[in-house]
Amino acid sequence: MAVTRSRKQATLIGLVAVLLWSSIVGLIRGVSQSFGATGGAALIYTVASVLLWLTVGPPRTRVLPRPYLVWGSLLFVSYELCLSLSIGYANSGRQAIEVGMVNYLWPTFTMLAAIAFNRQRANWLIVPGGMVGILGISSVLGGDQGLDMPSMGRNIQDNPLSYGLAFAGAVIWAGYCTVTSRFAQGKNAVTLFFMLTALALWGKYLFTGGEAMAFSLTGVIYLVLAACAMGFGYAAWNVGILQGNMTVLAGASYFIPVVSAALAAALLHAPLSFAFWKGAAMVCAGSILCWLATRGKGERVASS
Image (cartoon, rainbow, N blue to C red):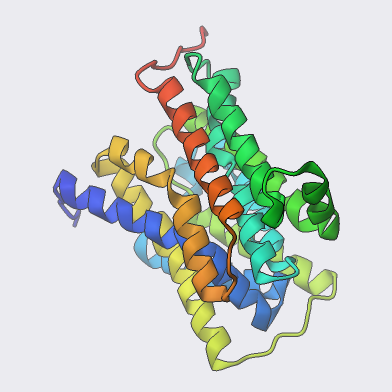
């Protein structure tokens, strides 16, 4: 029996997703400290798959458009691997937060991809929006020095794998959003995508010699919380975008970087400098400018 909700209720449920996603960086890092980067991520997506099966429902591949099934699966799994492993491979709590911030370039990249591939119209604000977002990330990666290229270079060289995965993830997620917009036809395959991600991570763990897992009460608590944040976050967001106020939800989502950094700093006991917070604010501002550049412009439909 379908559950009937008011638009306000659905919007509030969608806002819960924003809060849940904001906690992911700190929780994934907490899980990786007990179970390792690969094993911890595999456990998170396994438990989250079960939660999604119970809340969103089992995957129904027969009703999914084939382009969405193929490209959506490839891009979603690739992104989730990049996200979880980039945080898990970080050398410290502070670095995990910085890596998470690099990942939050995806709203800006998504807008640019929509313009390039979906013929989304935009005004001149897209240029300063993209530049402000990139400068914000540069300020974050500069550490306590802020917008300083030598400091940023040294920071990246300390762990190029984590930063590279995070940046690749931001690009890949923009591609996933573009594919979903064009090919999904209103269908939702998130349960299947999570299951495929879990399988890919277990494959990596088994065939590349994953780290030893140290089970503890703290680690299990982090695991359950991370899986809930992942699984229920996607379930809540799905309710919000289908039945709620998308304008409110889109606006709220652009503040995830700041909320995420605050929650992760508290969970990981990692103090952050003023330069970091300034950079995080710039990332948010850049995303909002890109959103304003395309708001109300509509989307051109490609001729058949």
